[in-house]
Image 1 (cartoon, rainbow, N blue to C red):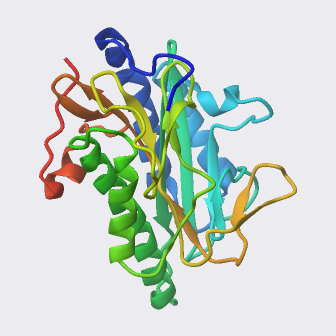
Image 2: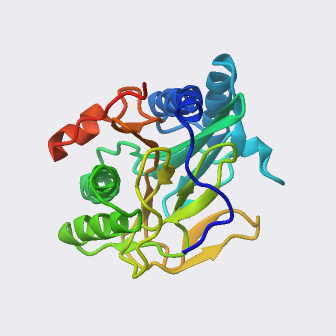
Length: 276
């Protein structure tokens, strides 16, 4: 597969991507702390924006044509690209928050999924929490694979295998990960499932955003009339997790994790190495 431009960054460019990654991570940590029943998705959006701007960054979602918010907030059957607004989170809701920051010329992009507690419906909460956990762990399995494989598209097989080992889940195929750098979305695509083509070499300078999107039912989606919000066709719940990861001469570093991914990768036998 040929790409339109060199997809590999220099050591200096990798170092420049640390700041936007950390600003993105901080915005999601602040939002996670604020998620509870009774809060609106627009209030969460404001928290993320204040955090990013307080760290000297710009919300890069606002740089996308036609989008004016800092995060995408997708609730229950909404998979991705949910628009923040007056929707009030309810007990038992599963909410995915996708955020990104631009610092200088460089971008970060990450997502988390949180289940709002509901003591009156423990089975619903447990089912949705497992969905969120399986999606998150599939992401870490993909990141761990990135540290070991020779070509990028091998990562998708590890993500798919982990998800399938956990039960009956749907892995979205129409929405995948991507390269990231001076633009939030760059080549190459990063698949969350096994594909025939090997993709580009995994070597120093590669920076990608891996983002599995998993459902409790179908992989078929519909787009709401707002033109942004993507939801499952059958109305089942969905989860979305994402990190931006840099490959460098010493190993890998998760740019959008405060610890570089140490906690998430430790159970999988991978030790992330800071970018020198």
